[in-house]
Length: 148
Image (cartoon, rainbow, N blue to C red; front, side):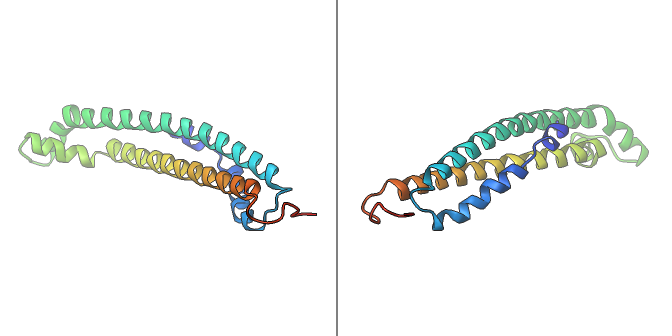
């Protein structure tokens, strides 16, 4: 689960992200290269996103499992050790402080953040691709001889 998130290497996305800043200096001769790069960036991001979503779902399942274990198995012992009357509320409160649950919540939050990051990156590359397309195929703008 968390290992799958660590295996997602976003350094290649940095290179593609830098190209977004270059769109303002783009001419029609370079446009096909940029279109290709942004298509590759979307493909790469999509692949990473699918791995992140899978890891996110696994983290959520793990969190739910640890909450159930804390609620059903561990809460009673904790309440006895701390002279707390065992009730559903006490069990729920214990589940929130159980170390395994806290760790699982942190991993789930990290996986949620990665999914959100990759969704936003995908959208940025899609917009960049559309912008390059508009720049390169809009005959009303320029003479058609840019870059010569």
